[in-house]
Length: 147
Image 1 (cartoon, rainbow, N blue to C red):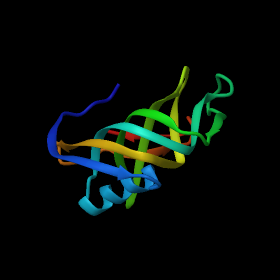
Image 2: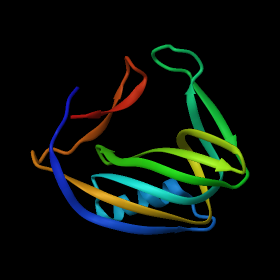
Image 3: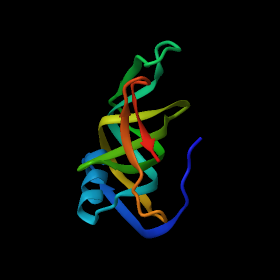
Image 4: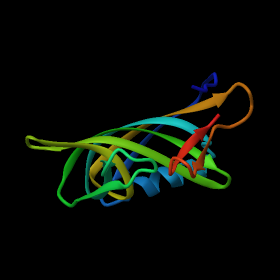
């Protein structure tokens, strides 16, 4: 395990509106406000999305299981904002549900907001002055936090 210490910087409260792309809006806010590293919580509803629900088999690197959902889902999401060089990286895991069906996964590519999603973003200020980044790890086949 590797770790760093830091403190909470700015706090953002954002509303993402009906029809907007949730991931694109989070990336845009991170760029606009120069949010280099942060943790966020989301609540609301989404539709027309792609997510990874785990690997097909227990192998490294993983071969992801992709799912598409087109109907409306309630969302409770947790994620982070990190940068790799000049690129914003949003990592969002969420519990999604409608009626008695529920799924959990990593939301990627596109997520359309239904009615509204509320985002609570806590910026992290690293006390060492060196930003945490997401760096591709070829051996594992994923992008990991670089501490």
